[in-house]
Image: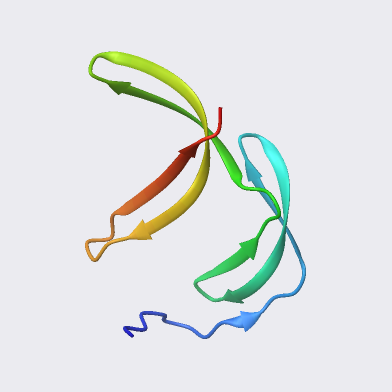
Length: 83
């Protein structure tokens, strides 16, 4: 497996707060390094999504279910419609 981490992870067993959509949300820390933090939530992260398909614009509520980063540094976000 290709390990791309630049710094070691350390376990983080503490509460984490983060802001999303002007709300403070709570999570539980998993691990932390110089480059970032991993956390877990008991609820999915919800987002509002507006997309135009075949000329028709729709606004939907969605849950973030996946994030992938490709070799070019671009991110792909997987969202599941929640409404």
